[in-house]
Amino acid sequence: MYVAFASPHIVDGDNAEFATLGALGGRAHPSGYPLYVLWLRLWSWLPGSTPAHTAAIATAILGALAIGVWHAACVAWGARPLAALISIAIVGAAPLVQRYHCEAEVFAMNNLVVGLVVWLAAERGPLRGRGRGAALGLVAGAGLANNLTCVLIAPIGLLGIIRAGRESRVSTYAIALGGLVLGLAPCAYLGIADGPASWGVVSTPSELMAFMLRREYGGATRFLLDGTEVAWTASVVACLATIARSWLWLPAIAGGAMFALRIWHPSGESRWAWALLLASFVLAGPLLATRFNIDPHGLGLYVCERFHVLPVLLVAVPVAAAADLACAHISRTTLATSLTIAGFVALSIARWPQLSRAQSPAMELGIKNLLGSLPRGSIVVVAADDQCFGGRYLQLTRGQRADVAVVCAGLLPARWYRAAWARQDLEIPPTTGPSLGDALLRTNRPVFVDPSTIRVLAEFPSYPFGVVMRVLPRGVSAPPASEVAEMNRDLFRAFDLDYPRPSRDDSYAAVAHHRYAACWAAIARRLDAQGDRRAALDAFELTRVLQPTAD
Image (tube, rainbow, N blue to C red; front, side):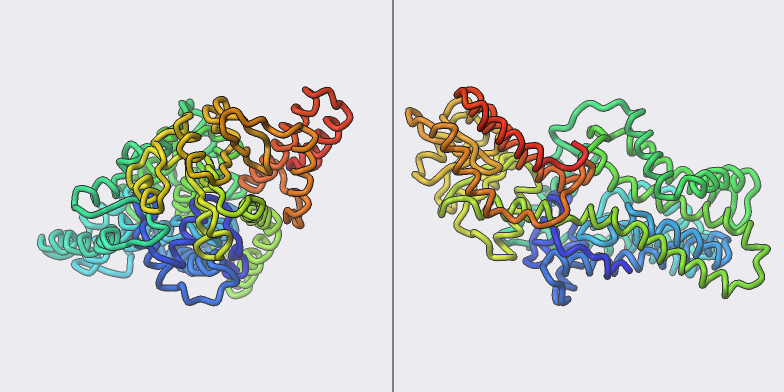
């Protein structure tokens, strides 16, 4: 099912970056995610229709493995296989889980790692003694080489290590440590990874440590360098709401009740084990949410929700325990199993429209339309991650408009990024101020910037050109508004917009259409300022037509 749902398009900035690295290799943004990138490289031979599709299929394999391991974990924690299957069928068909199991993102591998830890740490897990300790250490190291958020289930991991030590000798702890070091081995890839899509420079152990700890973002606990202040209550409520929706509300409530019941009256596992599982849930869910500096609404919620996947899956164990109470009275387990699997398929199909909107081609085509509209040899400064990494994806893996220099405004402060452009004879300053406009115009190439680059636009004459602004040298007048309108009508006629128009809640697909609409809103204002009211109304009508639905 996950392979069938694998996205053939890039859908956001991180997804575009991983799809590119899967095809070409290299370092991802800090913390680098070396294990996941190596996994994508391992499966880069898969016959996907696009590099994004190939990376999505490789991720779907991880998602399926994760679901299987979580089923085993639920059984190891005392649930009957049927009860575990009911739990996993519900969460495996959740739109949020399916999204990150069907596109190139690190969270499917993180789900697999955490599921392995919960399974291996259980009293009835698959290994004992030194084997348990070695496996937990290895999985923990591999998890850190993939995504640092796996450290949030440390309470369960430590439970498993202590159990391993009690089942064997004290040397088990040394074996576990050795497994941890071995699991971290993929991090060495960050020192040798290179290529046109690679992020940063890692040439010394200190640079490797800084990269792994996300120093460029201000540390491992910061999500956005330029984030906003958000009330922790809003972030926690958004996290809990995501968990409840993913579990269809009632099972989530049952899972919360089972946490309390199993700590008060343990079954399947010890009281301490259930308490530590609850602690891991709190750390990975509500407590982590308090650290978000992202407004959990609109596009911000889309960004936050990827960090909600882990607590959603941790609820699978208590939900399975709740389902186990009902399964005790079921005698025809074969029929019940078949119905559960059919229920998973039915839920997945019923939720396909929601998933298909998340996988809309609108974002990818928006960047393709941008690149295709620019004159040959242009320089375009983009501000958003989807355009930055999406532009790289289309140029490096699809061979589209390699003649255009796509400069990412958010990376200008990074010395390594400016040095990379300098090697291509493009000297750029570290800010998006007027000096950037001067530097780009000195190249005598057509220059375009994102409409949010207001300091450049305040200093130089400019006019709307598709979803960006054409920047002209000082002293040169912008064309009349009527000429700008006609120029953009020609551009938009060539744009590929042949897909269902996204809703305003459809993340980056909606963003692509907001950009289209913003272009015509700006043209309408210019026409109105020149006194051409009829043309202004026509332009404003195009703004309405191009907006996402329900806006």
